[in-house]
Length: 442
Image (cartoon, rainbow, N blue to C red; front, side, top):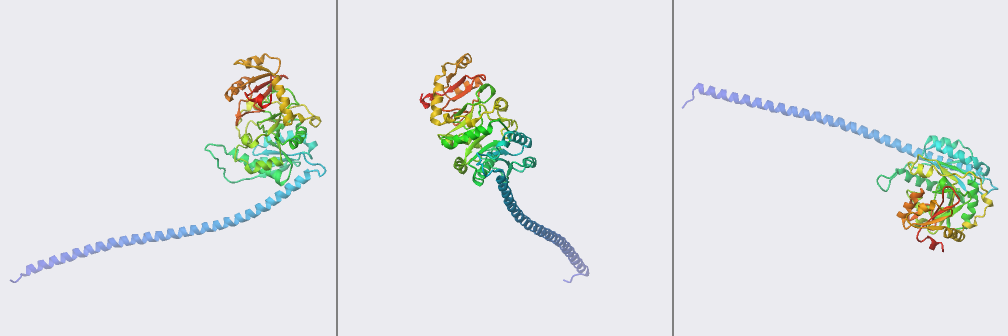
């Protein structure tokens, strides 16, 4: 059956519409992909730009790294040259200080850090009495760190050799919350003592801190004690300090004692002792380490009844601990004793143990919970026995002396006995452990 012209026209119209629709869809699709392609091209251009920028930055950083490496090499070379120069200056300074005709008794080192005003007060106190014996006691200042004011102050004193310990490594404490200062102090001490004993070969060194004043007979005391220290190997060190040296607990300017407790605060040791200690020196808390029985063994320390140093350092690494109660009231000896004319042989171990034992045994024993009250009413030396650390602390608190123990030893104790004067009088109070008399052979 033949199609009519009208039907053909309709078919052509439908085909034309379909064609136009397909063309429109094709154009839209092409447009969409063209936009996406443009975005991709834009993103690629941005990535290329960022990559180029990153490459430029890396290149710049590499140039900086190379420059820093070159700078470090130069600084290392300069540091090495400076170290050689400092060592040469130190050597010349030490040679200048030393009189070839006089063998030094001991080098004296002031340990300093960041307190220029304290350092000046300490140095001025020392120079009052050191100048006349400078060849016997060459003086050093060892600074830990780079405080400019301390360095300038130290270098102002031409008669003193300046040493500087600089350690830029970060301090790592062993326990959380610890003060890093105690670690820095221990490292500084080891460095300074290695310098003086090993590098400069001194036979003895006296260690002071930058917050101390000294007594008029300080140097005579250590000169006389040096002979004792050399001859008696049961003495580990000689100190100028008495922890219970407050005005109300002292009387006799010439009295010296042996002690199982390391006093510190102005002390002298020999090279042989330092060579023993140096390899095992602790990372921190060096003074408490010195008080361990495993370190001092069966050796004791010599201490005076009246201090030959006075510690005025209220502000420091210990944050003023005990200052007002125990340090500020310390009596500094103000009488010059000619120690070289004194016979100190009584401090030899056997002689002292016998002499001290007799003195303790002859003291009037007091018993009971009111023993301290009874002691106030006695006119002679008295002896009070404590049962244990807690009991000792109770009695010590009533008298006002140091209560603290370290490694089972009360401060200042010898064979468990702590002795002090009553109200600045000649009479003595002996606090005695249950085993003290047996240890003394009484």
